[in-house]
Amino acid sequence: MSSLFINNNKECTQLHNVDQKFPPLIDMQSLVKIYKTPAGEFPALKSINLRVDSGEFIAVVGKSGSGKTTMINMLTGIDHPTSGKVMVKGVDIQTLNESKMSQWRGRNLGVVFQFFQLLPTLTLIENVTLPMDLCNTYQLRERRERALHLLELVDIVEHADKLPSEISGGQQQRAAIARALANDPPIIAADEPTGNLDSRTAEAIVSLFEELVNQGKTFLMVTHDEDLASRASRIVELSDGEIIRGGAV
Image (tube, rainbow, N blue to C red; front, side):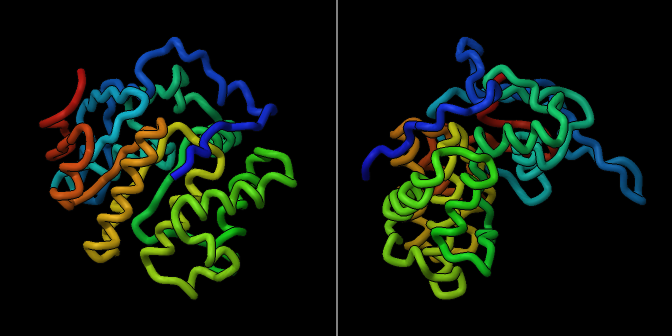
């Protein structure tokens, strides 16, 4: 596997070039999330403190309803905390308006979902190119070439011009990983990325994650699979909205 993660876009915004003197890469501080329900308030997260350094491979584990996905959604900006901060590369992401959040997310985060979320009417190469188009990263002439390189990286370049419906679930997940890497983000957040895959394909996907970590990416992977979680460099376990193992205060 070749290293393909040097961002050649010279027009990246200041949000993508935050002073690297701020440790750690990710710093969740006293994170609280309370949902209002017909039965009353439900505390999904209770004062979460978590620090993640660059290059770590974190497996986030816990029973259903423990707060795993909620915590990841705080990092990706999909949801907002009731109180507390999410600092990434020195940026308090909750202070960003929707426009800046979209711009920041596009350049700093790759997200991999359990159900792939590929656009069904676009070919694989078009799915991978789309984040570059939306964030205006890389020159126009470079985008297709980069997308082909990323599809080659995940071993499905021969399917570049196929629609998602024409390939297997494992191949769709590989395409989703290539798309997540399109803008060379430092962080990949994966929510149950192997949940719909057979054990052999899941093993191949996690092996790919490990290789990407070796090339400098930082991974946070939500999983119910204990065997896959054991492959991570650190396991963070949640229970009833609290970190009970692997956290950093």
